[in-house]
Amino acid sequence: MNPYIQSLRLRTLPLSMSGIILGSGLAASDLRLDAANLRLDDLRFTIVFVLAIGTTLSLQILSNLSNELGDALKGTDSEQRERAAYGLQSGAITMAQIKKMIWLFAALCVLFGTALIYSAFGSLFCVQSIVFFALGALAMVGAVTYTLGKHSYGYVGLGDLGVFLFFGLLSTMGAYYLETQTMSWEVAMCGAAIGLPCVGVLNLNNIRDMANDRAHGKHTFASLLGQRGGRVYHTCLLLGCLLLFVLYGHVWTLCITPVWAWHLWYVWTHSERLDKQMPVLMLTTLIVAILGII
Image (cartoon, rainbow, N blue to C red):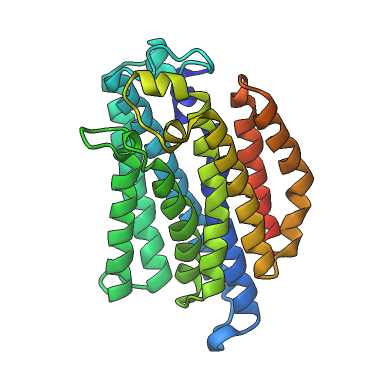
């Protein structure tokens, strides 16, 4: 595979779209029901949705590239053997080249985000626009500083919180508000629900890399819990997701239960090859988001 494409980590992209799809789907449903005297404008809705997807994909890739560079600078990926080496780790691309890619996708984040805000609010200078510019800037900082920099929060056990906030709450609630300019507790709880399996993907990654992370001073939440504790936590994340959705009447999400039951069985019975389960959880999280809007 082309090393540049490999470093983009395309398999993670469905995960980043889950909150946007969930929030936009809930918004479409409410707008069609003429909630708060609003009506669905198909063209505007589609433009905002496409730009939101472009923004979140750019943020995800920015995070992936920054993560690769940050781990490389700290030596964390130097001895990784349980997964294929990315472009920088394999030596196929240089640090100077990956830095250029980071700047490119940072620029795309700004471009898509600015177009998104203008399409949603019709102005770049209203209060709502300024708030979303601030949220976008915060998301970019969060994407870059997960492992990059002296005070990277992924190295002090805060990565799970970051994923929950950005992939769950901000993604879902932001997409909904951009379409409707309203908010509800149900949307917030759905955002929390979809954020839990997103955290599960990171947790699975951290369980896989636990020994290597500890050896290089990377203190993830999973490394603090240990192998068994990390698996208990993983189980709670997936069960919590389904519980929150069911509590708010989104019972179609239970259709994913057989797949997640098999996934949890695999995680509990295999100490190696956990990397194979990450695409499973990423794809099923996207499916749960779709089921959540039925």
